Length: 335
Image 1: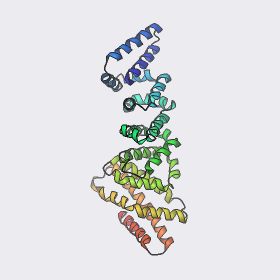
Image 2: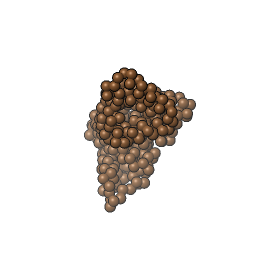
Image 3: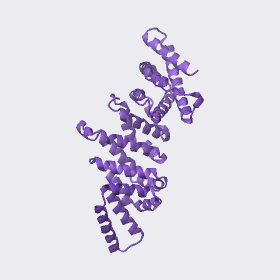
């Protein structure tokens, strides 16, 4: 009973804050415990959520501030075997995130006590479960990734995430998963989290820009998120950062061959995405303007690679013809 536990801990904190006599503190805890036993779990879940959404939310947030209470909450975050408990703790933390005043008060203490590491632990534990376990917990990974989306949208959290090599490795490997159909429901969340992290972690771009399997994985995500605007924006923002980085790097002949081969082979995915999601210039939103900028950067970078590769090869054949088709498409799309 997560909310029961949180209510009791909070009551202890409130009693301590008011310097109440130990016996009174004990009586308060016992009284609250009995109340929690009587009230249904349904009521408790919504009671605590309602409190954090009410005018009393700041007072309750202050009561949660002591390290001993926040540490206990984070300890629960690490207990992932129980799906119901996982759902309850994530729901609680999501409620905290949704309240601007509450999250402003609690986020730094939570980060200091290891929130990011706990959430990464949740993610890695879920990924490493056996196929049978995953079948029984089909919604758990989605739940964790959606929560990570919420967290990564907070500037100080995404900054902390960008410094965590373990998380970056996990996200990159998820993008590299060969069977995108199997992980289609996760792809959107992964690219959104990755995009948020790269916003505050530009130092990561050079590290991942020459990871061809990662770039290939990103391109393969395109057909999995055609109707998710947020995921498409995130995906194109990542691609534009990576390709701009590579474009500004001196590529040797071998690397140029690899990039040219990748774009020749996967360009159909880019073409299909662009042609299925045409931007209406007359109704251009700020988001669409950004998307247009990102896609243009990508097309310019691809043109750059193909042009260089064609000049270096100076030959004929299917590979050259494919490269010329890609180059021609990019040039037309940019004008």
